[in-house]
Length: 474
Image 1 (cartoon, helix red, strand yellow):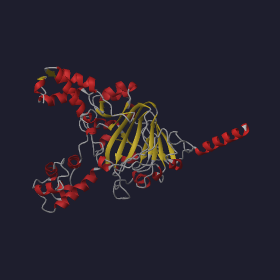
Image 2: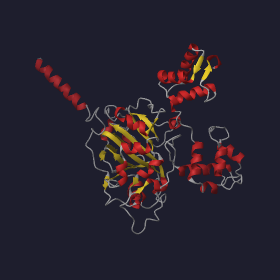
Image 3: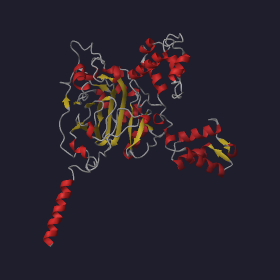
Image 4: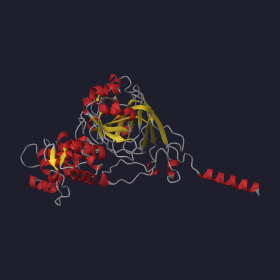
């Protein structure tokens, strides 16, 4: 009997072992060895802009550019001390390393911080920077020749982002809605790239378009502990492992699933987001790519315009669409407005008659595009509109996002909590002072001084008033 029990136990163990997929509850990539389908280039054999377009951008093939920025003098500027010394008062967007937590409080606001304060607190911080790169720093970032030595790629630069943490950061398995060139400036980063053709096996989350869902999305899996029982198709996914070092750049096509892990210690990358062209070979002009072209010398980002630029303070542009897509949308509105597109007619069309788009200032849009000031809009005026005009239109037709503003705090600290604290304070004291209110708001609700001041100013109706009778607060 003892022997039989032992045999049965061993059989059960073998069945259980056989039923557990390779890599189950391990980080993504443990399910099978990495492949090598991503092509790598040095500065000596990097493709020309036209070759890059035909062989990588249009067919959506990833590519690594090893050491293409390694010898650029600007690369030496990417240190904490230099960035803090030269750009310390500029702001950047702040996120929690633990994605289940709300965006943390920086020096003055929730969800953003000054570069100086972020650098000073990096060793003990549980946050990281994912932000638009302030345009003042464009002169510090060299762009590889493959993208800018000639041709029209720079005319499609939509946004430039900075990713920065003290080490150990991880991302979800996800895709992005723009093509991007990500260049490692400090530290090392591991990229796990899903081979094209396996996208249907990654269990992409269904995006809610009403909440800003676009063509970028994330997998449902936990990339640090993949449940291969729940998500069995992950076992079939072919992937490639790429380690990026300072001076390396990686091209990630739009819709290309990837998962990123930062190495230990300080880690910073800059990414240029640029337009998605489909299969349209005429979308980018390469007419100037003739004769001998310089494929050895990067150019500074400051030499080019970017669709959505940010100056390190105020409202951010995260999530804004390609300006040329905005132009196409504006053209449709003017065409619908018909030949006699006066302000009153345009406002009716712009607001969809039923006032669905209540947040739009259609008068501002009309005056922005009416270049000849004749009181009528034409398709020609929109076709010839500058990027600056299109930016105005883009902001007017896009809903205000608190996460892009200094008012993000109102989504973290509820109105109910503020009212409760206010009721307690006016119940205790005959007078409510600005100083006491701000102190209590910060201590009890973990709010910022900025927002505490803002609430008090709105209560009393003046920035100069520092004291109000409690019974006068309604």
